[in-house]
Figure 1 (cartoon, rainbow, N blue to C red):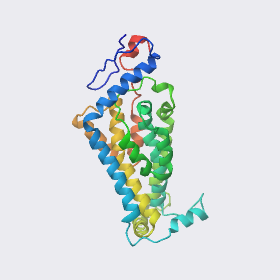
Figure 2: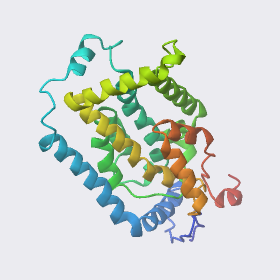
Figure 3: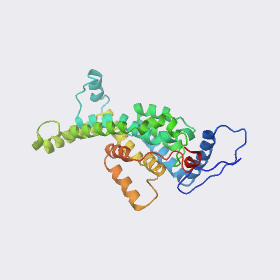
Figure 4: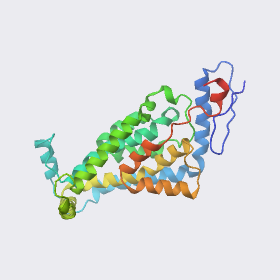
Amino acid sequence: MYLGFCSGANLNSLVRLAPGDRGLGHRKRIICKAQADDDSRSPGIARKVIALGTWGSLVSYAAFFKPSSLQDTSPVVEELLKNPLLPDLNPIYFAIFLFIPSYVLLYAATLLPAWRIQKWPTSVFLALATAIGPGALLPYLGLRNYATQPDPDFTKGKESFMENRWIAASLTAAGVGLYANAFGLFDGRMEMVDFIFIARWMDYANQFRIDPLVHLSSIDFVVLWLAFIDPLVEDMRRRRMFTGDPQDYLTVALIMTIPFLGPCFYLLARPEADTFGPEKSKTGG
């Protein structure tokens, strides 16, 4: 028998299925996987080269090319070991330190909708990324299939949890708080905010120069920020928010302008994923 198609931006796939094949959801996934494979063919090689090349560069830099100004031990690590709950850290670095594992939730919200068609376990790489950041995420971004088609079983799985607006709102509130703290808005001296921030930035710059943890994790943060553009555009395509118009590129640029907060605002504003495409109306949902 023939089964209908899973809608996409420029592709309708029709797949012959044997009578003994499994249920309707499984058949839909086969079709959507074929479409995802087609979607990734032309830009797929460049995407893999960029992701895996960046990962290799990070590993090589951390192992062989770190600046000689870095100390052998990290004062920040010592502080975290002494006061794990309330460490006395530079507020700018404190924000970066917390943004790194929090970014994993942003990646989860954009990567999990396509986990069923991936050969590699999405959840495992996301879990590892909470500890080693881009060291785990970049290989996954390089190995995975680019999937712009909605998963017909999306609302039934673990990935639908990340559609919850309360999660996006909580991340946004946390991000606003960390930014405000970094800028000195919680110090009660609004007339001194600019001087406070400059002093904190100079202190952070010095720590970046000498502290190995601050140095490497700050680079990890920048990589997580910039690498998010790929799953962001993929998720926007999946939700029919990105069709290649100039306005779409401007929207992506605006989202990416503010690290962490921009993606948080996107999660708050994005529409629900079109989980079944045109076949939803045929089968009654």
